Length: 141
Image 1 (cartoon, rainbow, N blue to C red):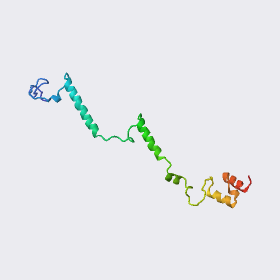
Image 2: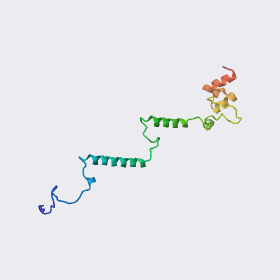
Image 3: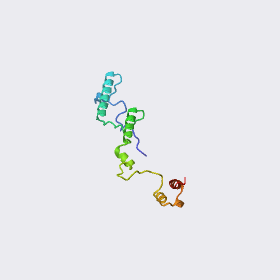
């Protein structure tokens, strides 16, 4: 059997230890001492302000913008700015502008094959809009 634990190895019971150790005032409670409470609050505020001063502000593009009309308006303006019709955009979107003497480029909805068949007069190979175009050009309609 295990040896019985007696009172021989117990040094002290809770609350009865006599000590001469001085506890720093900062580690004791401040209840009943409003001056110390205000002092602690002021110290905490100063520490918080110092930590906030070191923070890098979050750019508006990464900020949570729900309920922030200023950030939402800024994002919307940035988005709309990308959609402005610049000369470069128009040159890519409208290849007929500045086509260097190629003539008018238009989209009639016909394929290259249909156009060549219309030019050659092959009505039997045409369907739909291509056949209508052929009949219109030949005066059948």
